[in-house]
Image 1: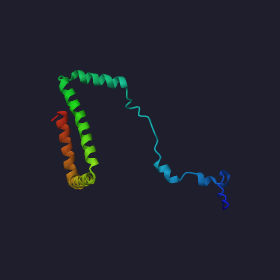
Image 2: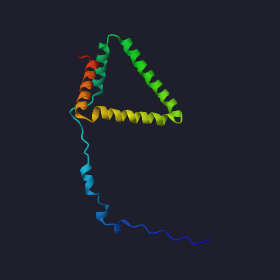
Image 3: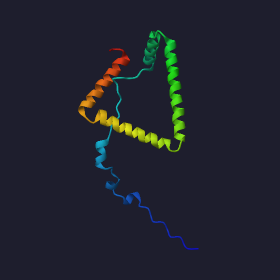
Image 4: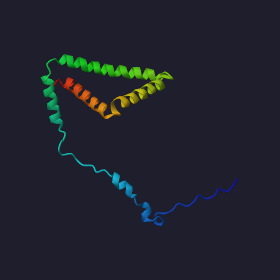
Length: 135
């Protein structure tokens, strides 16, 4: 049985200079300061009263509940479908390529040129107006 060689000694804190322990100066530029936002404090009671007022203003509550339930079922069904697709060996990679291709097309079509970005912004504003009913 061979004799074990001793482990190298670890430097003590007294042998390390203060400059070696000091944080680099470049990290000071990335320092973020947390601050409290006193402009918009969130009051739970105010939030619930506002939601209650909006719920009381809804005329057809059963339709809202049906749509909400349908949305929950749709999300669950989408999760099941994605799980089934993910279990097929080659299909997830193909779907990833399709997603990358669509992302590339979207960037080329709407984000690359200034005129197409303006077109996208006007399309988004039109959809917002349709959703909110201000059109």
